[in-house]
Length: 437
Image (cartoon, rainbow, N blue to C red; front, top):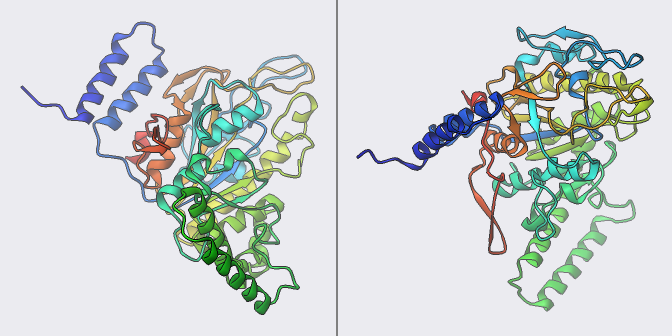
């Protein structure tokens, strides 16, 4: 009798299960086919060393950006896209007209159009889901994707923090049960370093030295400890002290960049993307960049009612900065080593509300991957003419996380442990095999 190994067993049972269960949607069968393909292959492992994760808080509308459909009419309540669609560098793949620069580099991009989750369409819960890959738990505080990756891979350089957040701190971005050593440094302004790292003007080198000597004395008097939380916290303090000098903080001096390049990146969000590239060069493993902290259109991506009127300003700002970041990384031979990820808490329905805007929709929406050494195809997954129902290649949030983990060399099948409780690193996700072909 032929002996099955684990992957062959998973492959056969996944395919057989998909074909034997009545009532499965075509997209669900495709999902099982992807699982079978992954299960019958060696462990997928990409070459990306860094992640720049762009967070579009509020809920980016897929059919107004990366999954355009026939144009609608908000005045007559006709469902459809708000803008015209344009062709891209990938034949058969279109995007919104306001993504004209990104359209030219879509051969380095994959818009994953079939992401979905069943979390309630409410911002806080969905934000948690899209950062941790899981629903809120009353017993376990799960780590964010950034913390998962830096826990497994660490910093690329000893002279850089592993995880930097350019935005406002939040528990959903944090390390959860992994502890402080897998946490982030954060900043909200590109002109200054992370909070707590930049010394006040009155703190001279001698004064800083006396403070560190005093801290060392306190440690010595406290004696040794085996409490993991205290050890992690102490290591985080040591890293902060090492990075608080002028050497690391020079990375935040964007004036060192050519003016024409800074102008191509655009406004404040573009400068955050430029800073992200500089942090990659310095050796930071994972950077999250929040878009639209200053609410450019007055409503952010949460375009209910009249908030949709200036949505194009958000899309144009994202377009300019994203396309420039891709080209800039490529020129520096960093694009294959840097995975760019664009996520949002959910999408928007094709129909319009009474004010001409859109509500929330988690059943089908788009997230984006670029660079990272993946085999990009412009778009993956297919939705119906209303971008509401997934017709082919559904991608769950765990699947999307597994794809990012695989691209960055993290074992997406691994278990972590919250105490003695095993926690699958991606909640049983399966990477998108096509992107690793």
